[in-house]
Image (cartoon, rainbow over the protein chains, first blue to last red):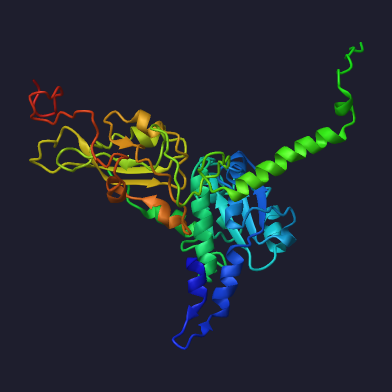
Length: 186
Length: 196
């Protein structure tokens, strides 16, 4: 019941004072409607989390909505290829606001060990990501940790990153820096 | 070719369909009330759900968790910066910069140490190849912890100090494998300066 006391911070006069944002965050974090964007093997672990043993429904995030317009939490589960990235972005744009994204597993988070030209090196290159869950695939415990982290984020009203963080070094500059770097041992 | 299937030998009650459906629903409804009105973990309750953040399942003994760099007796890393692990890594998530021990150190000229040892735990696929490749038992995945999720990719970059601060599941920073330092009577190797 920790959440209720945060929402209803009672005053000395016996009034239940509350902030509307806190109430809204409390309501939102327990009614996440998920859109599973499952593309690869991490899906098995996603199902294991949804299954009765770990039961993601305990957190109110169990009901999958296979329409982006009805969902506010996108699970990107698995490798995203360059050809799929526009579809992912389009689906993200169709989702209802406020919307959250969880990058599930190594491939969605950073491309994983697919170091090639067909794989997007992390979906945060395409859409903003709220929580990264590492693992190949992550254990259900790690997935639930990520979900709890997202719920804390929603409760705090933290919308970071709402937009993509700008790249600090442009690719060309990075290449020039690499070339200018003195070769050690020569 | 058609295969002949013999008719099931059903009683009149079974053939009527409805009593059997009622019987099956009775089991379902009975389980529903049993599980709803008896608390978890009691006799006769069959809910297998783990209340994860409060109740944790013990991981198997050989579960591959977060990496740790094992220590020597004096607290320095066992790693000799041979780059075997970063070579074996299929995800290329290990970055090592080797350095020489200072002049006068017993290990100078014999082995090196990692000046920089960085693992991108987000890129790591937890295959354990680095542990298998390591000739010095310097990197291990027996911490018994899964890598916790985070909101920023920068949080997953673990440097040498971080990796050396992670204990094994039993709380120790060393390994049970013995290590023979240069100068020990049990030390088998030769170094560049002193050939035996």
